Length: 115
Length: 114
Image (cartoon, rainbow over all chains, first blue to last red; front, side):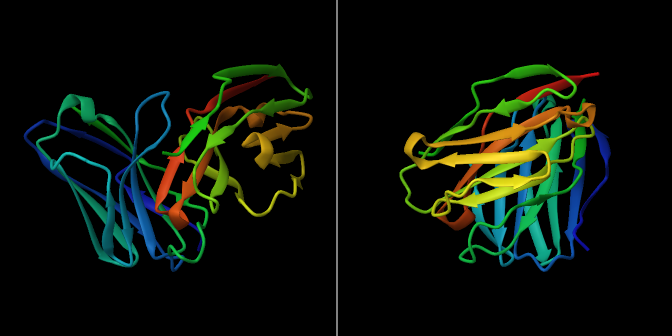
């Protein structure tokens, strides 16, 4: 199984809502990532988990809260978002660090719209 | 700080033409990794190739080929005999620190016209 799955595919939420994005992989990868991609821009790294521990937080606002319950799952909890947070949110996974920078496998993304 | 430049914002070619996408990177590390990804209109990023800083051999995979030159800090990508299905945004990316720092270039939008 060489797939990264993400749910939901589309999400529309109000600024007072609380929602979660989910990501799952079964490739035995121990590094997982969240990216944000605005239209016509490259993906921007938000968070990196390595062996289920938060390794990198690229100064992301606290209204985004990541969680890695186990080695296969990665969540992104959303609360009190702003309209400018509307974007495509991509999840990726790769081999663990120190094994060389393995290529990242990306999910199809969740297209988020904040009203 | 690491940096990736893709000077070509958009390229249009006619089917069966060859096209080269440029990528220039900047890093202070001696160990780093370079990647190319394709993002078709569907949105999903598709991995194409990984190259580490110690391997300057060029690579060919079907109609795709890559030219890695450390002397000019470039990692260019050529599509031979382009097809309409090659239309996508192509990102070059650089990873340092064994993968913990990963940055994409701005991307090149390739349109292959029938």
